[in-house]
Structures are given as C-alpha cells and as structure tokens.
Image (tube, rainbow, N blue to C red):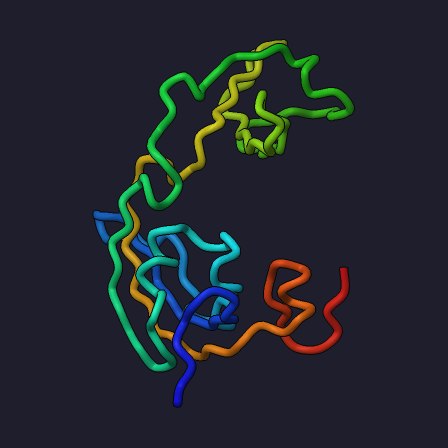
Length: 163
C-alpha cells in the first residue's frame, strides 16, 4: 500500500506558486522537486494541511489565505531606526535582509526598504505578508523519515549530508 502524507513523512513535490493575478512567485520547474519533512513547519501551514493524507502521484491546486501562509501585514511593522543599530555592518543598502531578535526572543526577519543619511527604514513584514498564495502541486514521492531526519528536524537529500 502506498504511503500517505502524515507527520514525519519526507515529501517531494513539484510546484508552481502564483499570486491572485497569476504572477509566478516561485516554482520548482527546471530544478529538483522540493523536499520537506511534513509536520516540522518547513512549508506554510495552509499547504501542509492540504497535503495531509495525499499520496504519490496526487496533483492538487490549493489556495492559501494569508493567515495560513505568511500572515497579514503588520501595520506598525515599518519603522525608521538609527544607522548605528546595524553594528558591525559597514554598508546598509535597500534590499538587504537581516535576522534580529524580536522582543519575545524569537528570530525576526527584517528588510531594509529605505536609507536616508543615518536613518534606515526597515520592514518586519514577510515580502508575501497579506498575499493569498495559489499552489499547483504534484506529489513526486512520500516516504517515512529516518531517525536522523527526525532528530535534525528536516529531510536529508541524497548522500553526504552534514551539519
């Protein structure tokens, strides 16, 4: 019997991700299928839920609302801070991304959106916050995760994996 996707499955999928206007945001086309450990938070929650219980060869189209993807836009997520806050960074330019510690201690991604003298405008919103995501997915393979993959919390592709 074919293995169905569930917690601790290693899943390989080909996909195309578009926004509501049909613009391709990401795709595995022309590269290897995406490999992930189901249940470990490596893909957006809405897609993970839709793939649960599916099997090798299944194809599906899934619309994921922002709340189940990269979240809604945080209105106060855009701030202007002092250039001095970027300790050890010689040049700060628009488009640079950093990881900082959020007030609750978690990792927070920030993107530089404007630099004016000693003032740097940052945005803590994910670039796809507030965007509904449309996935066209084909499941290539499903297998049980190895003990090592479970210990590491992610899938290991091929030979020679090292940390």
